[in-house]
Image 1 (cartoon, rainbow, N blue to C red):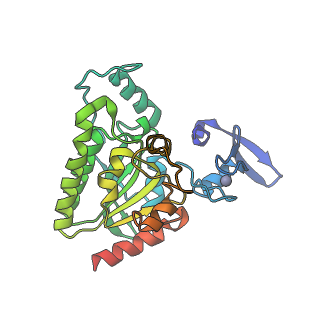
Image 2 (tube, rainbow, N blue to C red):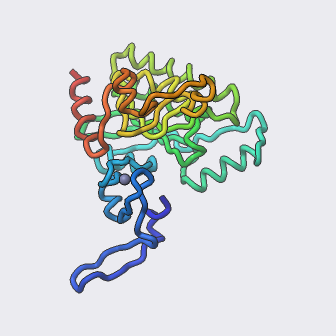
Image 3 (tube, rainbow, N blue to C red):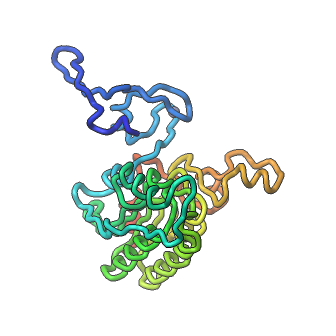
Length: 282
Ligand SMILES: [Zn+2]
């Protein structure tokens, strides 16, 4: 994704009348079908491969831009940071890992929260960013979601959470697991206030996130081909010693089984979500 950072773009003149901006290494190979894609056109196509429809990962800020009215997003709690209560150390310390990921993603933890409008309709929005420690859920992710939902109850607006996660953040041990009931408790109050709660699951959504707030939306949407589950397919296959069905844990498979209500192509999300906001307002 570093291809999309502006510093890497160099100007190149094509034809006499047309200037094009071409990034260094401007061709990207689709991970799914292997076709070569022109980076600029890929960005215009919302990072979706036009040969096979594969939906590539987006950063939280790209996602926010895509699904909200221009300049309507107002971030909250941007400065919440995790505390290394357990003095956790694997190959490096948790404190160093947090600093490294903050530098890499430009964000202090794995979710960006705030309020925004779409077609003028206000809602609370939280978007997880997989670049930050695989968007694992620690106490900051849980706390930010909880505060966002509490704000939504106060302002009487619906909530949309865009998920992507490897699961609970092991560096925070039990504190990360406690975020599962905490977020669900806050969402229960949102339900009592009869405010809509929507989820968009993106690739990949796993572990404690699937097992808590991601699976209890009033409407659960998913992007095409997104992998969604609790444990990964390899772990399940090895544990159960059985062959898994084709398409196991894909958004389409889960739509058929009833966990997902709708698979929504990225280009259609604004329109569909705007309709949902209208419908639930009634
Ligand atoms: Zn492709």
